[in-house]
Length: 369
Image (tube, rainbow, N blue to C red; front, side, top):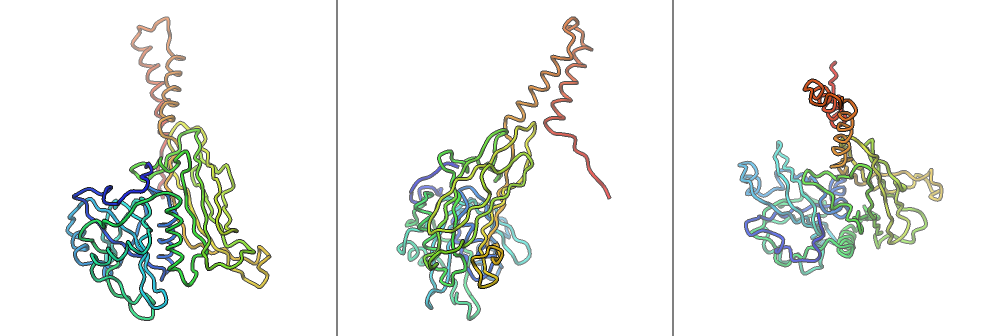
């Protein structure tokens, strides 16, 4: 997915597309996980948000129940109580892939797009259009209102931007609402000059060609509430689970300064068939188990957020390599002295076909118990 730059959201939304307002908070660990991913994951990542029926507007619930399918867009907003006032900060836009109901839970899959944190002037216009917004976000009483609802139209004052500057504004908006300091730092995965995350396919997979490499940058930014940083606040850890792939650089990015950026590289071995897997991204924080915070063994890692990026090793080259091997087999077995003999051609062609199928798809068997 290519960069869109800085544009009005309305210019990217079709005339017949509908808009969903998706609000999340920092009141539970799962919601913190969602909010961190909304801020940090690259454009094209697919994020699954879940809402209980009591927090979904009746109109939207009915539309999903009756399968009134449409092209939906989403605006993800972070909400929190700040000094006794309910505050809302738009963070990011996205394209809704699918919505489904399971019991009293509605799940919504959002393909993340540009950031939408542009200051205080954005939310008031959205608040006027929305209905029954959540109140009592302090947690001292039961929260009421709709965290997921359809807006009458796409907000005209939302500016979409997928740059690093836009991420920094979104991180600042996040920290402004995280007054209890649940998240000491945030990260961003950026494709860099090679636009690594532009390789996302419509299936949601990130493809690395056979024998190729994937390069990206990881930005980190610490909360302004963090005092002097004498010890690491935590780490962003990347683990690849796909046999042909391996990390070329260190898989850990340590948050030990106010603002930083590091380069990451991942390589794929040459393969004859595509291999699926995932790239796990974890944000962990360090909690001291004793007064000796200088001792690394006294720091307990706590996972605040985790996301598995679906990856696939190989795209076009495995097919070309398998085909080349099959052609070489045919050439080696073909008796050139009797090349007009149909039996000779069939045997050589059959051997080449078997080589191609075995290399391209492998020998797949099932196991029973």
